[in-house]
Amino acid sequence: MRGVRAPLLAAGLALAASAYVALVDPNRPGHYLTCPLLASTGLYCAACGGLRAVHDLSRLDVAGAWAMNPLLVAALPFVAIAWARWFARARAGGSAGAGGLRSAALAWVVLVVVLGFAAARNVPALAPWLAP
Image (cartoon, rainbow, N blue to C red):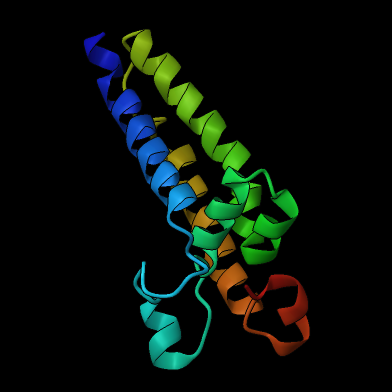
């Protein structure tokens, strides 16, 4: 049981945060901080609309969540798979890391996708599909 504490704690925190967002509607002003990038520049970051997407997902509104932040919705299955692999490794007594070059390459791919998404959602022609 000791080895699985970290993945279970991470899952518990994610579920608690999701439950809070489900109960406290981010569409109503005054409950959450404004994105600093959006407030200072008027540009959307990759996470803009994420709270509203989680709120919509908590109500099983996948289309609404997709409209708020398609990257978050698309990434959730991969995050769930990564957590399941982490949990399985921890339960088997393995190390937490995936290891070396593969992890570094994946980190770079994720960084490029996130930055590319952030840039694309600020292109006026793509705003109807990517802007929150």
